[in-house]
Amino acid sequence: MALGNWIVSSCVPEVDESRLAGEAPADYVLRLAQAKAGVAVGDVADGTLVVAADTAVVDGDSVLGKPVDAADAVRMLQRLRGRVHQVYTGIAVMQAGTDRAQTDVCVTQVPMRNYSDAEIEAYVASGDPLDKAGAYGIQHSGFRPVETMTGCFASVMGMPLCHLLRLLDRIRAAAQPGLPERCQMHLSYTCPVSSAILRGEPVG
Image (cartoon, rainbow, N blue to C red; front, top):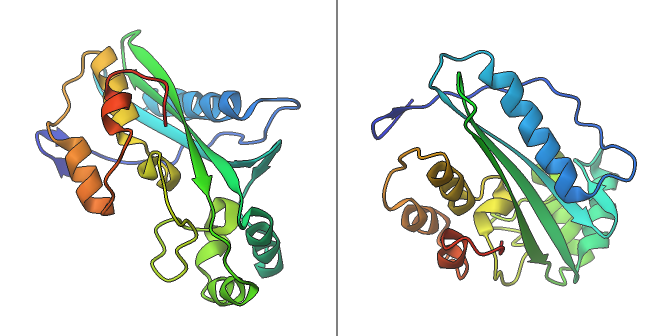
């Protein structure tokens, strides 16, 4: 696939995604992102940029994976309803054949609205939450699990693009101009933290 003057391809590296005992969420997603990038960078030509990410839905001390069935999805959504949880996204950027590598972690606060049991049942019946960590898709127009957001919407969907731009800048890799604006346009979201992230502030 062509992206401006870049040729982009994707792969799914095989890594063990088990969480280590006592591992903090930030350490967990960062370790997996680095592991994925490390596998992929061995399969590409020197000079190629590899970008890898891993995202986790975190509630307290628990990392919520994909529901095992519809009943599990209902339990997760009931657990998260009316409360704030976090989404952690770790990103690793490496350049094959060099020692150029950078990592970052975005932590986004996600305030769930107080949806009803009937809304949960209808959403789960749609099948949408069954392949999603935490049993929800923030972008789902019918369910709309989140009332308001003050953080990085793109991170909750899996790739915080402003954090990625920071990493590309650190390894001196040119990125296309206007990416934050296109991200917000695509998501129909006016991001209140984009400028702060690009300034290097620890926000998400």
